[in-house]
Image (cartoon, rainbow, N blue to C red; front, side, top):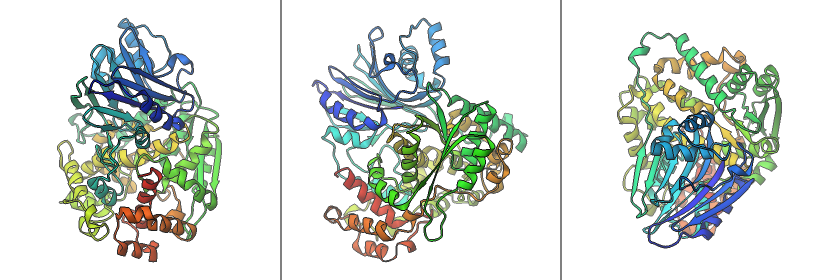
Length: 591
């Protein structure tokens, strides 16, 4: 796990190694164990390293293979790198290091763009060819590893975070009106290629981009799973699906133990993270370190789920660490949490993951986490009502969207309004495209490949990597997701959601964890803004910078300030926190 950056020139000028160095330095928290910049002609690459596999300097980056004429910067982990290395050695390749970075480099030489289809893992990388001057950018199937870029007529720059790109300079920082529309309507989800800034874009997941020496670009989407039933699966019982899910998840968890350092688990006490712990115990893992976090109560809403994480820790004899965050620490950590965001993210989970990661990183460098289970196995409350819908777009928007296009026009100033209902158009296009059998399949596909990427997955990457902690997500193993996509929706929606996963969980963990009410990462202070939290957001939204920007109508802000707890979105989020977070993020990045 690392941070990558680079500049590719198309105008005949030499790449600006100093600009790449500034981006690379901005990525230092992602890679505290090493740094490097390599520049040659029109291409310069930068890297910050977190040592996980092959801890020697032989695996340092940027990695140059003079014999093959290739240079790579790589962020992520390829879990099957040892198997691929054996296959490449059989083809005659010789290796000078023992890690996965060199495997990626030589796999590209052997198989070209198609190399990504052989990788089990999470990744974002850039490979430059010395002879042709071509560069390939690539991102993993679920965008677990980020890749932002900024392009002008003469060059393209890329980096693991948006703030790092800003450090290079020359970025158009104008707010993208269509991205703003998605942020305000699609629960802060801004799908690729857009970001909140016109001058910054992001490579879509499951995509490779070939960039020629003259700047011509060709993108290829290399993975599109079908959300349909397979003829060969007809007649499979619920128990059959349970066993398939159990075996596939166990394999996914096993794959993500590959490391030359210890691997722990972020244990919330819910079904998903508890299953990871249980499956690791089945695999014979001992002395496993687990970590949970809790916050102070607010307005009678409990701020921790320690009773369940304690139960799992005791059942499987883990080395458990409970972290309790008083309200004063929460307030103190908010500015750093916002600064760690590549894009504005409204979920209260951000502060939880940020503070949890701060403590976990004191003990270990790698953790497994349960993100993705709800999107892959149907755990959210909006899926069951869609089973019999005749209008999946309208009914999805009704439960997920924070506000309609019409209502948004009363919240934003006229100059920041998009001409069309951007968020609904995006959702419509994804929901209605071919390859999904029914409305629940369509919603699961949208959430797994769009919402998940630019909300939970991005959140986990940003907050863990702020402390040099690598988070691995077994529920996003692509073979597990391909299996889940074929399961009949009724098996997923059973038992109030995630039925087939809960069936598998009963083979592994205590029933008290499975049959409990669904929980979230609770941070009640940010949901019910009052006291110093209300003062903080009022100051941000009343500042000179906010007034000059003029995003929101004052009448709307006055309503929010008067009674924040009355303005809660359908997904139980605070409207005031949503608008304040955007302004706080813009100010944090000097925009």
